[in-house]
Image 1: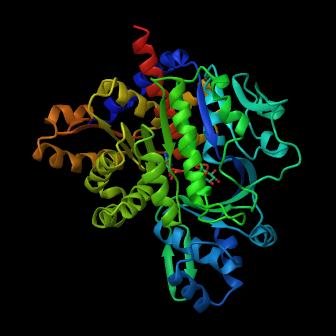
Image 2: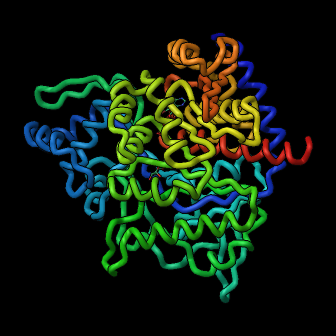
Image 3: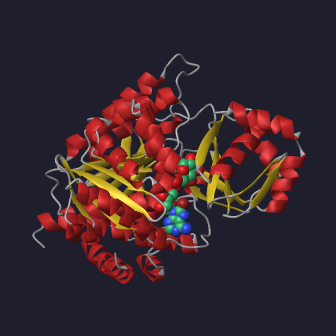
Amino acid sequence: MDLAEWDQRHRDAFYSVKEALPYLEGVFVAYNSNIDAIKHLNEEDLAKLLELFEDAEIQKRISAYPREINEALDFLARLMISMRDGKAAEVPTYTAETHEWLKGHLGFDYARMGGQAGIIANLLAHLGLKKVVAYVPWLSEEQAGYFASSEGLFHPKVEGGKVFLKHPREAYKPGIDSKVNWILEYSKDLEVSCGGNSFKVPRDNRLIVSSRPKWLRLDMDKEVYEQLDSLGPIDGAMLSGYQMIKEEYEDGTTYKDYVANSVRAIEKLKSLNSELRIHVELTSIQNRVIRKAILEDIVAGHVHSLGLDTVEVANALNVLGHEELAYAVIRKGENGIMALYQGAVQLLEDLSLERVHVHCLGFYICALAKGHPLTLKEHRDSLLFASSLAATQALEGKIESMDEAEAGLEVPVSEKGLEDLENFKLYCIGRKLCSPDEFEYGYIYGPDHDAVIVPSKVVSKPKATVGIGDAISAGAFAAMLAKMKQKWAGK
Ligand code: 8BR
Ligand code: GLC
């Protein structure tokens, strides 16, 4: 595979998608936005944290693998695990003490927009989409301040029982608190020494401590639900934040109520426009009951598209009963490209989806149901556009305009990614999924699905990794929608 050729394809795709984006009327983005307090950890920070506890205590907690952060030791154990494996994780905390402890013992470097929906809404608005309607059930005044000042960005505001579209800064709910998450970023090769165990961090990544205050509810205001049509016209929706759903609430409601409401909102959105496409962006979901419910009850049969990273593929397969495949994905990480591809196809089938987009460090795989309105070339352009956005986000830490987004075009395609694809070539050709030429284009033709696989651009020293996955999924999904609209317009 030729690196220069893929660089050129990235460039062509970028301009072709740029031309298509104005065909989009509007995108709806819900539900989660929060403030991310970002701290880049260095050796000194780590040494200070590790000094606070006995080594044996830390090791014991690492073995216990806490799925919630109830005290500082849980945090440290999950941080060690995440750094040891170089794997991103998001762990909930239900107590405000964690926040206070982190503030007192660590502090943060800077704060910015967090939460998949918040990040996606800002990115799409910055790319100049005509209309982006964000919806965050817990939009506080402080949180609203983190939204882009773009003219095309809106949020529903209920006034006298009627829904109006306003900029988020004019649509917040007064008197409510903000949700603050802690993002602990670390770099490749950081040396960690904890008791007898020493290791070098294998790749840049982060641990997220996700605050889950009691008042957090993944829901839609009654008026907004009833007047969803007033948000239109909408070509697609990007939904995320379902991980916030709890098994049980103090008022006696359970996750089943919130799942049912979520499905109702999805069905209502679809009823507004028969061509509307819905994407769900997955994240790390510690609770297996909730993870299963999100996949089987919210995603399956209701939405069209799913976006996720390697760890999330493994976790999803695991709760859907494909333990062996999940194990193959997690064990081999991004080298397990065969397992990842099989995993993506399995999710496509199990969840009756039209599209499953897996993003990894160095390449992306998009499994597609047969009969999709776009050609594989158009899907490939959407993925390559996303790869350039990811490169800009990694390089600059932000994307505030389409012109700024072009910076990513200068980042080279990952050699490691290309190497991974080379290894996958024999598998595909051996199974008659494509000819050698088709593979060079990134096109795969399975018996009951198609797929596109592309090498991606990777920045060697990223500013931060949090939010890159969202930029990839949002870029590719919006590009796909835009290409569909452009096609239907006969252009
Ligand atoms: P999540 O946030 O969903 O985990 O996605 C992170 C994605 O960011 C990875 O799948 C990878 O594609 C991308 N990424 C990371 Br991490 N580091 C990157 C880098 N340095 N350059 C480009 N993309 C990167
Ligand atoms: C999750 C986290 C949030 C972070 C986002 C990035 O939504 O809760 O803190 O900004 O992921 O993808």
